[in-house]
Amino acid sequence: MTQQDYYTTLNITNTANEREIKRAYKKLAMKYHPDRNPGNKLAEEKFKEIKKAYEVLSDAKKRTAYDQYGHAAFEQNNGSDNFHSSFTSSTSDLNDIFGDVFGDIFGNQNKSTQEQGSDLQYNINLTLEEAVQGTVKKIRIPTLEQCKSCYGKGSAYGSKPNICTHCNGHGQIQMRKGFFSVQQTCSNCHGEGTIINNPCKICYGQGRIKKSKNLSIKIPSGVDTNDRIRLNNEGEAGRNGAKSGDLYIQITVKKHPIFKREENNLHCEVPINFVIAALGGEIEVPTLKGRVNLKIPPETQSGKLFRIRGKGVKSVRKGYPGDLFCKIIVETPVNLNTFQKNLLIQLGKSFGDFKGKNHSPKSKRFFDSVKRFFDNLTQ
Image 1: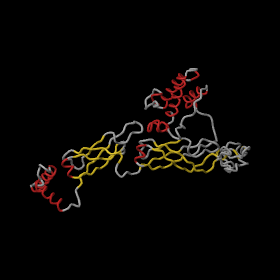
Image 2 (image 1 turned 135 degrees about the vertical axis):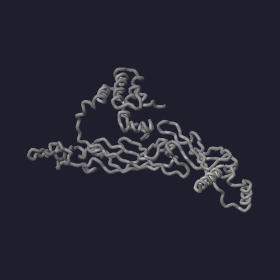
Image 3 (image 1 turned 120 degrees about the vertical axis):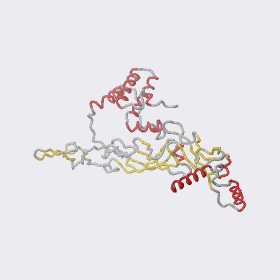
């Protein structure tokens, strides 16, 4: 089923700023919240859509990905949507609404010693066919994963870290020097605020272990060089059980032997012999989905550009394909036998003066210009 555009869901334009997005979300969420519409399944589904749209558009990175790739930006990990939290029908969602809207005004007073994991980047090379049609790539990446024995805490099972006695759990120590007060990282706990006396025997107190993991990456159709795909929580695990970082898939499309891509259009050079160029005919030209016939009109010159609509690359965001541009290259024949050479000699004689206007209009204009140039020099 086709998903509705997130901007349409919130009744805003794609140029709406952060405040406008929050205002629209609050208005609709209050209207369709299940607690205000008990037993109304349609309102519940509408609230899910509103919440999902807001979670994407209120996050700058997710919004950028959505503007570039649409819903395909979130179709990773076997179709699960890691960008969106699970839906629960409770009064906590009403609190979330006010928290999202007014949290930036009053500020967030919660502090945590947890440190989010680092983001990772994986460079992947695609053929033009894979980039245009979309594909699934299996990759293996080295990373730091949360220790399953201590759940990222670093302490052995059944034990807990002790509060550092040097900094009293603050991770910082204030030192006074005359009129000045200097704050430094505690050298005993290294800013953690706790000391692990009984470290986990699996991760040796680090809370994370080095591992390689296999992932299946869904590449949406229409991607191009320098595009990036973001996978939430697939980066390094955070410290002390904190959230994992993200994994970015950096796209590079390899050079193609036939086609050159410019945005959503494809370009190629098509050589033809001078007989077809002079008399016209029909030839086959390649596309990424097979061959198509191209009619060559008589007296076609080298460099002539033909446009075949709809045979380019389908846009990721807009959903319609570009065009294929075929540049005609009239090829001079080689390895002629005696009979063929004699035919060309007779053909050349039939033209008469090679500067004649009937058969070579460009040559005539060129030599006329050359003559005028030298005539002006001698005046």
